[in-house]
Amino acid sequence: MTDKLIIFDTTLRDGEQSPGASMTRDEKLRIARQLERLKVDVIEAGFAASSNGDFECVKAIAEAVRDSTICSLARANDRDISRAAEALKPAASGRLHLFLATSALHMEKKLRMTPDQVFEQAKLSVRFARNLMGDIEFSPEDGYRSDPDFLCRVLEAVIKEGATTINVPDTVGYAIPELYGNFIKNLRERIPNSDKAIWSVHCHNDLGMAVANSLAGVKIGGARQVECTINGLGERAGNCSLEEVVMAVKTRKDYFGLDLGIDTQHILAASRMVSQTTGFVVQPNKAVVGANAFAHASGIHQDGVLKARDTYEIMRAEDVGWSANKIVLGKLSGRNAFKQRLLELGVAMESEADINNAFAKFKELADRKSDIFDEDILALASDESASHDNEQYGFVSLSQHSETGERPQASVVFTVAGKEVKGESDGNGPVDASLKAIESHVKSGAEMVLYSVNAISGSTESQGEVTVRLQNSGRVVNGVGADPDIVVASAKAYLSALNKLQSKADRVAAQG
Ligand code: KIV
Ligand code: ZN
Image (cartoon, rainbow, N blue to C red):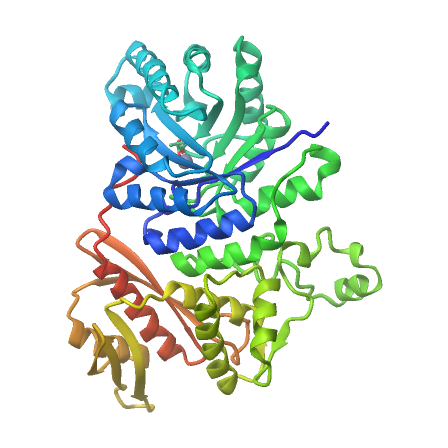
């Protein structure tokens, strides 16, 4: 008898709600394909009724992904539900995820509805959804802070109407593991038809306990679905992190006794892709996917690991996609070796043309940098699949001069709709001068709200990966650029952010 834990990934919906993490349709599609390779059971692709852009994203993912169930969020009303069902039509397997707040605070202050009205709306919305689709998830928003008696009444009714998954969100990250686990256990014990639905946990990380709370919901509460995001991406302090929850359940199978469908070797590539796309850098000491997660610096640890690996290692780095041999390729490596390495890293390119382009960039990089690490290849692959022929701005070349006691000068050549232009400026430093040189031509007027540089493989020989976050007319976007020269990386990141600002994605805040 297997007892499976369903992994529901909401990187593309709840993760994307994080300010600055908004993604384009192509970026979402690329991440969805990676989630499918990871064998995620359910992918929450977006909130179809929130904007035409989101509708199109859900639809495109429903068309492209065949092996995971595709889900759309919907408020508990007929219009939202119909729109979500419409976007999910092409899906091989689709799910409608309805939500309606049930805490006294949310009902009174946000919805301005009485508990009886909420009860009726929950019931009717599930009835309506059930006529459109067989797989229906219902979430009582702010469920953990809701009155348990009222929650039991609502959840019993929606299960009776045909909800197949009941998700209990800790919307504001207020829960404590033992209390949250018992909260779910009590609901399941008190609700007479609770066995007719799969129970799910959805925890936010405001007190740093999203993973612990989710695991308690599984172990104590008996939940069999965890909602999570890659790298724990999400609003405020984020959501429960997929890689941590998956590796905890896999590594401690002795304790949880649960099976997973996840192919963990694709975890690192997924983490890298999400970080590169959103510009949310993964901290080096982050469990499972941080650069130091498997690095043993102390002599005692190194000695122990060399003698017997399990003295200090509870997981194998290779199992989550890290390679044992970190220096992987050099300038003499051929296309086949490059393609093979992409495969080993879990990176699938859409076409031979994409591989050729990425390989050309790899050769360029190898001419300038003697050792190419996995991180370089992952950055290069993300960069390749993120670039589009129809982008407004493209980097061409840059020259800058800086000398102690003199004001730095920069001149940047870039393309605007395919035509080369040159911008020149001075600035406080070479990066500042280069970005001002671009801005002198583009005149976007955008405000820079974040600039960060990260050494991809940890030394001055490595590529610098720069994230630039720009804000303009209420929109916040991230641009990412990588290059051994951090001034060039900065210019690439700035142009990438300008491209995103320029794209006409219309979106509204996901939650109503
Ligand atoms: O945190 C939350 O309550 C949510 C629901 C919409 C499921 O994301
Ligand atoms: Zn949430």
